[in-house]
Image 1 (cartoon, rainbow, N blue to C red):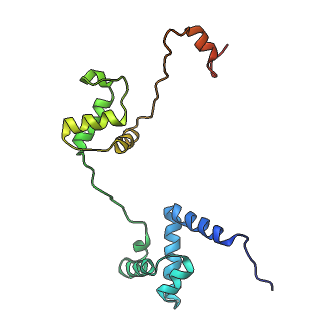
Image 2: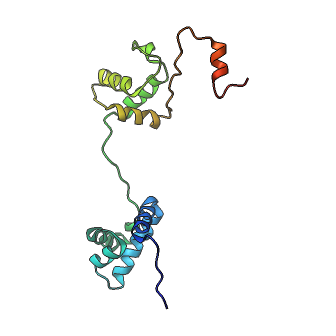
Image 3: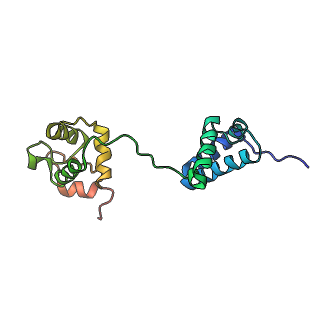
Amino acid sequence: MKPLTIADSPTIILGLQDEIRRSEESRYDHRLHGVLLVAQGMTCPEVAHLLGDAPRSVEYWVGRFERDGLAGLLEGERPGRPRRLTDQQRAGVDRILRNPPREIGLSGNLWDGKTLSTWIEQRYGVAIGVRQCQRMFRQLGFRLRKPRPALAQANPAVQKAHKKNSKL
């Protein structure tokens, strides 16, 4: 019987590995297969080479399986870096964002990352980057709004007719 081949297999392999890493269920299944192959007599480096992982990763999977059973192969919690603001401070940020910056004595009509970063540093003494502040907007349920520029001395009727989404 002629062996089957897949066209452009290096690219396909990378795509399949990305797909495996995409969801918790597929990562669990991937680890399960790795432990199964070790249980069938393959070494960790052999399994790692076969599955496209680091040998140390396979060793970790086997160790967690030996210690915790199938639960050891489940996706663990990834706490990440601790937040710089306390929950109480974040609640204060959430409250302040519900009003325009002018109400607390800042310039501008809309909040942006730079304004929020400056306000947090002044208020709480915590330096948070602009990008992290933009992320905080999203986490708190806000969306990006860009003001539409108003042209000086422009005719509003002509402007309305020119807009692509206006009804004539």
